[in-house]
Image (cartoon, rainbow, N blue to C red; front, side, top):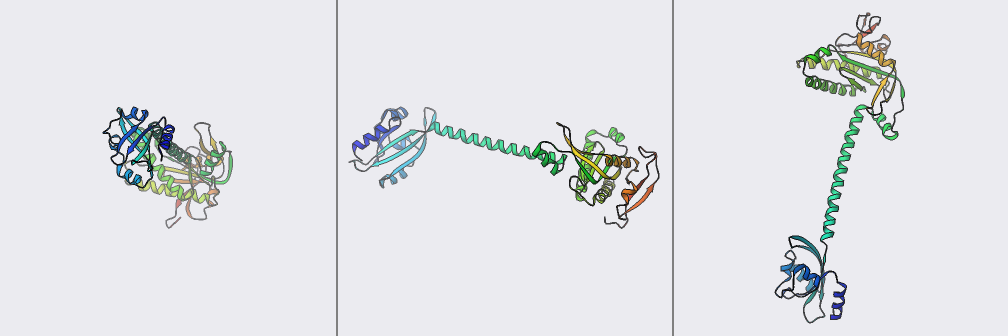
Length: 347
């Protein structure tokens, strides 16, 4: 490279730091004003390694010995600030001396912007992850409140159209003496007990295709056949009810609080929809739900009651006992059938 070419390169490099490097001893023979602004006035004894301690001098020497070009980056302290520069070394083999032209560009601001962008990207990624996690938690909560098909409809259209489901079976359960029990026990204990029991009932019902619709204190309502049809909806709720009572009996053997449940079941049609606009919940209602509540009120503690029409669909898989009208709520004129598990039943 001729002197004219070097001068031309120097002129093009105005605004960046420029220096001539003696590759034999790595001293600096020329530095432009920008270079001097960064490193101070020219020191005849200054060497390249003194200005850029992090620079790999051996790699530079090897590259320049091949008449090549080296582009790299390095950082150094400048008046208590860390400055980052892009370095470009170009060998000048046509000159009498073994010289390289060094062009330095201050990229500190660029690096700071890159760091800011990286930090922003990490923040966006973290926020996206948090939003995704919260979305999953909301979806999980909503799926606890409504069936998957109903949730998909609500997510797609923003509303859930009321639907008539027929035939289905409804199970209604409550606990005998719950008010007295609540007044005698610590509230935290009652809530913990109900949480354990209802979680167990949910798992049992799920095994037979019986889904919990709502709880209200000691009231537990589940249904089979909503929203997906189930030909064995009656068997589903009875099997669930029998397992519910069996679970409570075994639990009472080892727990100080004795829970006595009564259950009513009924078959027919129900209307299912999301009720409310803010504190919304999926619910079913209709005469079948009312009938299940009536038979629950007529049931003795730790027993299951239904109508004779309902029990006629069970195909002899359970032991049945007619119960005359009693004096409990709704039951003064209500004839019902008590459903019990057969001694040798595997249902």
